[in-house]
Amino acid sequence: MKRRHVLPALAGTAVPGAAQTASYPLQFRDSFLKHWRVERGYTLAVAEAMPAADYVSKPDPAQRTFGEQLVHLAAANTAYFSAFGLIAPPARPAASDKETARTYIAASFDYVIDVLKKLTEKDLLRKDLGVPRFPAHTGTDLCLRAYTHTAHHRGQAIVYLRVKGITPPTWAFEPSA
Image 1: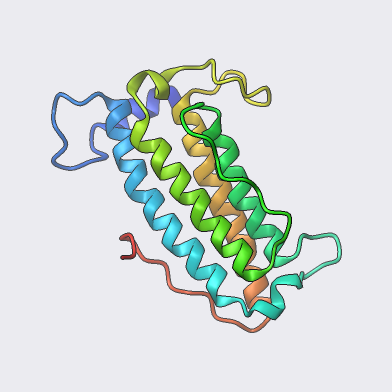
Image 2: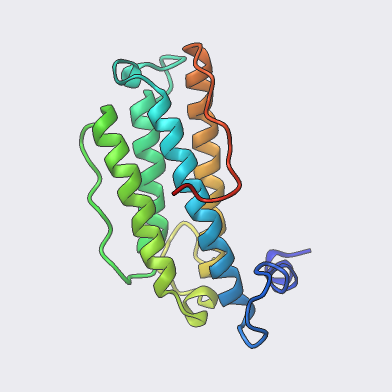
């Protein structure tokens, strides 16, 4: 089944208690926003778990450092959501030390949250977002790409923690305060 057929079916149950008149793209947006806040908290917890001195470490010479991995994750968040053209994204930092990376991660997630709050049904359904790599993607497709990309690279960051003998933080299903 294609994603464009699955989303309407899933969105109908995505937000319990949502107004019955809300369109499935807006129900999707509201559900996504809740999950994105969880992603924010967990990603920051993973970033916090690594000692500052180990932000330059990497399990293999061919890989990014831990700090570079997190900055990449955050930069992709802003890249996906800047395609909507609603708000200017935070600038990508040149450094990837703990404080810089953590600040940029928080700014990137907050940026996405601000964009999500402004998205309309038209934004979520449109395919003219000007992303050459994904020309046929809708706004909802970009949301899903961002979510998957974040989970993918955060999973890699968790491996970096394990290599250092650090137990990763526990996943929470609700946004942190």
